[in-house]
Amino acid sequence: MSDTQAPTHDCLFARYQGQVREALRSVVADLPDEIAARVELTPARDAAHGDMATNAALLASKFARRRPVDIAADLVPLLSALPGVARQNLQGPVL
Image 1 (cartoon, rainbow, N blue to C red):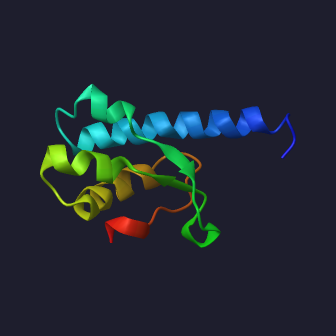
Image 2 (spheres, one colour):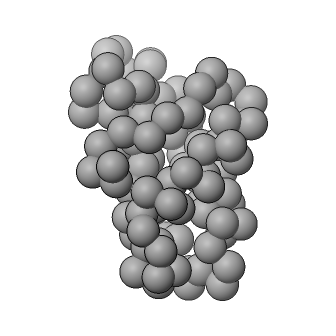
């Protein structure tokens, strides 16, 4: 990746990271700022799992007293509705 492409990539991830945090706050009422601040959006480790991955459901599960997979399932329709998101699916450790 060239230096001219990196800022666009970082900006895209930062924009969606904020939207993931907003969606998580709508799924988990009264989510503490400390937990929301730790939400990450990163490139998926395996391209078969899509372009991006987040730890949002795992981070919120203890506070919400819910299984991560249930939180993730609630996030799917919210994140799928975002402009530029072709599809959303559950992958990885929450299953």
